[in-house]
Amino acid sequence: MLRYVVGIDVGGTKIAACLMDEEGKMPGRATFPTLASEGPKAVIGRIKQSFFEVLKQGQIEQNQVAALGIGMPGPLDTKKGIVKNTPNLPGWIDIPLLQILKSEINLPMVLENDANAAALGENLYGAGKGIDNFVYITISTGIGGGVVLNGRLFKGQDGNAAEIGHMTINFDGPRCGCGNQGCWEAYASGTALARFAREKIAAGEATKIKELAGEENIKAEHVFAAAKKGDKFALELIEKEGFYLGVGLANVVNAYNPKRIAIGGGLTHEWNMFYDRMMQVMRERALGASIEGLEVVKAALSKDVGVIGAAAVAWSIC
Ligand SMILES: [Zn+2]
Image (cartoon, rainbow, N blue to C red; front, side, top):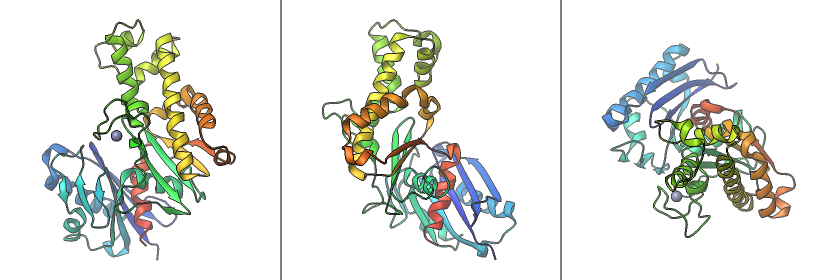
């Protein structure tokens, strides 16, 4: 009899669930809006609903499911299955999520930080297939990451390892959302790129970025669009973006000595715009021995990485 797992990725805007078989096929898929403002109880109700929906789609019974994996933004206590305090989900403070789910779903369950889950997903089904020492990095509004060392997800004592977006790259740098100063994500995330643009524009910089953004708030995508039109200031910002990415990557390489790094997230839509500069800076700064066999590639699972990652985490406890 075929075995299945269910993976559920709980994000700030949507809950995505899948039923996955041992070959990685997904006979059940469902997405619900998170509606996070309604609070934990309502969101947990929709998590359960998504679980039963994918079972129904796959026409299988709960006793054919080997495990349930849940990916969520941290910080978490993954050992106890508790969501500590998730900024995108208001009211989620010390919520014993797995214990609550167990009242209706009688299965082995695992809770994992979403970036760690994504790393495992890419490692099993995406750009990290067959690679024992692998780092996944996501660059979008923030920077997150997950690390597979010697073929196993590196979790850390409480499940919060590999928070590489919050490594300090400048001790005097801008304040980060985490409270620290000069974190990698405060320099190299899409949010940071847009912030650098806004700051300089407010100080009188002449650029096409403002025209392209129109009435909208300036976002990273406007910087890339202006750069493609040859806007000098936008090109400078993207050169800096590549530089900051390369500095952080060098730290990642020195810390973990991976065989392969896969980069996902919104910014990778503009991969060719920053890749060369990023690689150049990484090569200049990382220890030589660690970059010889290193590959840096684009992640493969795209927008499905969260839900496939959650399923991968479920397989890891089977
Ligand atoms: Zn930070």
